[in-house]
Image (cartoon, rainbow, N blue to C red; front, top):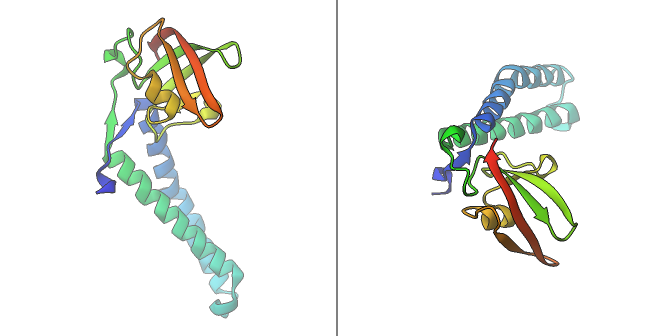
Length: 160
C-alpha cells in the first residue's frame, strides 16, 4: 500500500511539518469555516462563487492535513549525531565540485518530504541524491540528467 511508505526525515524536517499541521488545524480551518459562513449568507449556494471557492479551499486544506498526518505517522527520523561523516547519507551536508558550472556547492541531503532545491536541500530519492548516497570524499559521481550527464566530485561531508 502506498500510504505505508516510510518518509526519511531530519528532526528539523519533522518540526516544520508539525508546525504546518498545527497552523492548518488551528488557524486555517477556522478561517475557512468563517469564509463558508459568510458565503452562505449571500443566499443561493448553486451560483455562489465565494461558497464554491471556500469549499474548494477547505478540501485542499483537509487533503494537506491528511497528507501531513500520514507523513508524520510514517516518519523515520535520522539521528544526525549518529551519522557517519565518512560517507554521504540523509542528514549530511556534502560539499561538491560541480564540473558543469565549475563551482563548489553544498548540498543538504534530506528525505523527499523536506526537499527544497532552492535551499540546496536535495532528496535522497532525486537522481543527484541517489548518486551521492553512500559515496565518500574524493569520489567522482556522474549523474544522468535530461541533457546528458552531470559530474560532481565530493570534497567534504559533515553533519548538518
